[in-house]
Length: 370
Image (cartoon, rainbow, N blue to C red; front, side, top):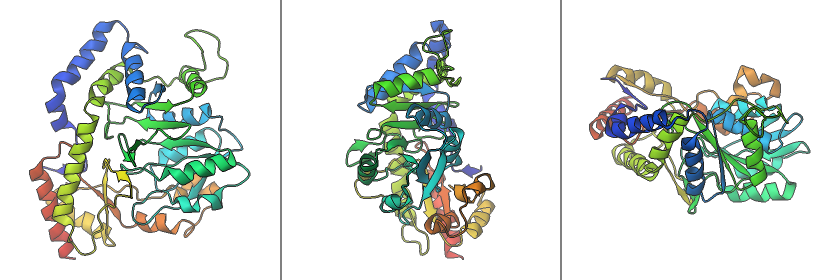
């Protein structure tokens, strides 16, 4: 049987009754669009984060787009983020007409190098967009300090870090707003697309609710500022309500998988396992390792029917779609070096111990044989 970095079928079999009951609950409710399940999920997801406001949207990319728009970011503005991220982070900045500006990352944990932030803030900078990558938090203290000094907005990209904490504080609770994705692979994943934006600011939340519904204050009312059709699906919201109650268990399951990798692979020469930054509680959205012979390892593992991913092989600043930004080879040296060495091992809470042992044994055999 093929082994991949993620699959949901074992988890679905365990939770099938609850998932199907969620679907039945919605279908029997008589409300299929922006009904009680969306409202309840918004309330519960906000409460989970200790915040007063949450707006459910259709996917994580639009959570970023609407979050930026609700914070007043648009044409002529610059948004500082990282290139070592999924492309949607940067696509969202482009979608609102703003210009992404990149800062390099730390070699050990792959997170935004906040010591470099000050050097890229300019007169057009309006927003800092830290990405809580792979399941752990950026150090938000210097981000917030610089934002306060320069009157900048802070939008946290939490798509990969549901439930992660830094010194006990949940990601998504320190900026002006925070965007989440509920794509099925996520730590809190739906059975389709979904997203949300949380915020402590009532006016930001009011703008978000207008923007996700064409720009209307109420249904079939007047469009004030043109918005989007970006509503969270009622069925996905009800599924997410059920799964939110298990979020801490999902995170602990992922940590258990990470511990088994550390025990089984920690002594391999040349293979660098993930580092948890000081003060972080890692939730291991993906388990990203490094090796200078990455491509040879991935090719060799296919003989064991193990097929792995790279998160991410092409830094965003090197993509042809962003060539107009003017970045060239060597501009973000750590990001570029990591892109040539990183790859992801299977990581999900329902990963069977025997399947993981197969992966560990194969990786050991391949790496020692290089």
